[in-house]
Length: 278
Length: 339
Image 1 (cartoon, each protein chain N blue to C red):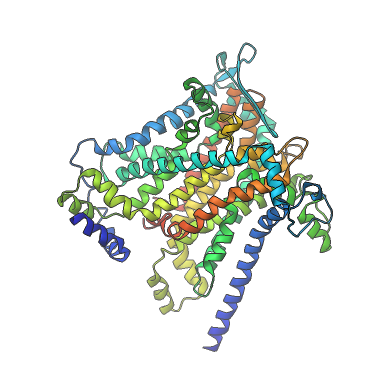
Image 2: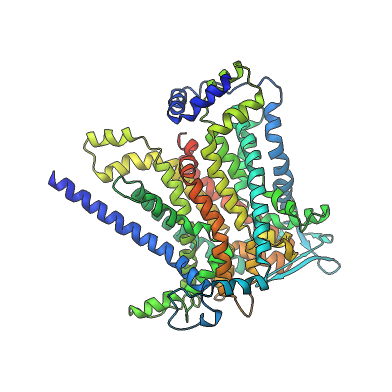
């Protein structure tokens, strides 16, 4: 018995040491980002490096705002990421529901076909997409950034896997009770899928919030810049505005961080819980 | 009325799980629900599919088409020239194309040493990156899943925090951290007496820097997915194993691993796809250097397409990349035992 508790204590000790090490490694760069955001640019290249945060955050933010209209780009990013997430959630959940719960011709091939496109690198699609958007005259618009990735193969995969867990009998009985086909989707499937929807929402939001190369090609007017593009402007060939980049990053993290905190419990439950049960 | 009672029942997830469990074993036999409205499923998938076809399928086919051509730049109009920071992008009007058949592919297979170099670099990052990240992710998830650990939420959130930093931003942080002269890493190494390392100036160290950066960024993401997988492993299996006198290792080897296999597979495959598409990190942190030691395939595609304007050739490299990643994913899925 005593042996047992000794071993347990050892496991516990080791576990905490491991976690603390990983956590420290994760947090050091972020801590340094905060330090960098709060000291003047001139102190950047001092040796030894500064390790304690300063008081220059607002000065650095002002410099950033003068350099690029960062407030505007936060707005752009929010509009694009939120509408993209909502649109994509609707599209993916509807299609996922059909793939999980209905029988139709070419169902399997169509699904695997969609899945196969997961391996496509985004960079591959940029040239044709840019040409397409120029033809339609959509460059420099929100819609050009939102639409192309709204049909998200990963989203449809997660939705289908999770929706498979909805019992058919449940749908049948709802139907017998007079539910219309569409009610099956939005009154039965959607409410039960809230955890997976939350998980997918985080993934989609994250992807769009951090999307880089494609928006860079499509959005050329400074007024349309999203956060990553505004940031890229600060990385020059001669000079990198580290302090301003760190200010911008610390601000850019906030929405995602909040999302994580609020949706975390769902996220853990939701992601892949359907596919695991296969 | 009745619907709302069903919903109320659903809300209590236990009831829902019980129903789900009841049907899990029968599901394969029961055919899917038959809709009363013909073409309803098609109606449901059509919005997705229309966007999918226009914005994913068409560009893919177009890229495939372009890969058989050579772009003749001289007479063409430039549609876009953009220079943002260190990034340059030029996209021309594609009007004058010369059909060259398979010669683009011939060139990338047999002649283009820079492509081979980028293939090597990417593979190197892949072979270190994926085992490291999946292993660490699994270890972290296992510890966080253990009963004896407190403040799980806090640890989980901190480890997942790097996922929230954007590409440019985190690349810049690492550019600074690993800087040879003013970086924090070298400063620490010097203080503890190991001496400085030329992280970005040496080919191998530069590659390792990229691996560290990517691991830092994506570890939390993989950990969360693995953690969610661990939490679905039925408790009874562990209890049964304990009754049989299994050790910790045996429980891990014969209960956890087999139960976790689909999730592990998902993590491995998605990490593979992600690793082969690395672009921003080498672009910002190492700039592809020193002397192309860290240029990745996608960075090479970018260079060919947007700077040198070899649209046809860039397309061929893209197609090659897609084939490569597909083959690897298929191998992983096959040996991983996916359905």
